[in-house]
Image (cartoon, rainbow, N blue to C red; front, side, top):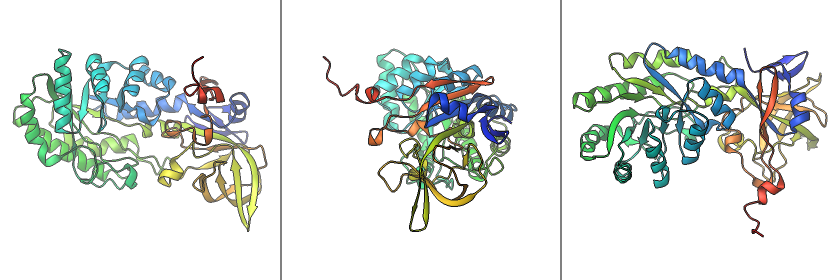
Length: 414
């Protein structure tokens, strides 16, 4: 299996030592396995092969241009949520007719960009958004393709910050109103209602809520088709979860087995929007131990990575497995923390881990999604470098930020 495994006791990515990567790229550094990303994408593509489909990679999970390019080469589409992501997807070779534009608050310039590019669909989230897309498409003398995002009020079981399908969430249109909105949309002369979409949350590890969503969408699609609206697509969103272990994660095969049966009999192209499920396990954040500290019997491993590099533990109480790059015999219980001046700057607490020495490397695993993508310059820290491992070697696909990078936009032009 592609990804992170030990070779002669040293943790490596597809056979390339993480020590060698850290020597050249420095730390902290994000390391991604090209083979693991492509393997995961192909599994989703094969799992859905029984129906006409398109796997639209959710670019917000990791929008590094090298990753977008390799997925474009595999035939992926993209799910984007900003004008920047749309431009990046197009630049990296993902055709416009394979791109869907999601998000509850699209700006006018972003909508114009999507209309001019001729994207597959806007996933519209309100009646007002339909009006705005119609007006902007009319001004451009174009016809925009639109799918309505509905909120089916289904509990995904996700952390409250990443649950999106409940009635009190800001996302989508009440599913009970959707049929009437499709009828009303016939008054718009510059858009065509081509699809139906829902996304109920992230990190979903049980197939039940996803199957229920598919059933609700299939029922609604049948009613809309019966009303005379000619739909092309049914978009099941994303949300497929990644657990600490591969065995605890929801596999592409199990996902497809849950969501495809309710769609039987609908002659519609099935769209899915996985992001985390494609890249999470393909990435690790490699960090160097700065200090070992003890305070009243509690032990701390202070690393050079921080919450500005990987926010998920502080924001979502997310747990990432952490392994020393070189194993040592003695184990102890410690917190792995960063140098930022926040109590929330930690990666794991009360972990049993091999006792490292100062200067040793640690690998924070399952960090390929929502790691660098959510990084910041908090505490005036430059963001980490990113490395892609491919064909037995590696290359830096985003250099480490310097002080000059951080202040460039603040310096007055001479």
